[in-house]
Length: 291
Image (tube, rainbow, N blue to C red; front, side, top):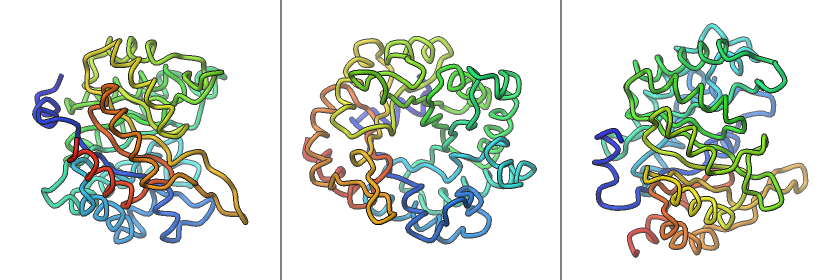
């Protein structure tokens, strides 16, 4: 484990942040618009998202760089601005952190599948390395490979992130199968642990896909398989569409009822994903401090 991560977690579970995409939408991001481009066009609004989490108690915040790889940015004519978008994203979160929180840069999927040969391993490796280099150059404290559905893509992204020398945490989405404990491609938590451990990541986890109740058994299984730090960021339940708007029904107080069990199951980093906001983080902060 990287010394930076060991120092960060030495006093117990660490509170991370909440959703980014849904918060940027609330600030005016239009359907079909590139969220990552807001680092260049709406930096004040992006910084507001990050700052709210810091003020709510987050000790780790992410960056608005989830889709800032050449494949996703290419859909918006921004493939040649990968470095610019990522550097701006890290700098925005660093300003918002103000020395009160660490900045873990987000690296999400390419939007293309290896399984269907939409992309090959070399292409993915090159794209993720380009993104990771920009993130490192901008001064991020660590990298989180997140919301991955294809384990091979996640492995390639995590290896690219490792080449920077920064601490790396790798996360999958587990929301498929009868028990909602498999990735879209059928991989189990144990298989994810095996693959990520082999390449030397500094933390493993799960995010998105389902509500917090489903994360407890996944976390427990990961803890049985590894002693590495575990990163858990659940959704505020499953999304529903009401009057053309996406709604998450779980409230902050309902969400935090499961935090003690999640921590007992082995979670080291705790936060929220889609549908969560600063109110969730504030309630989680109170709950963690009371444990």
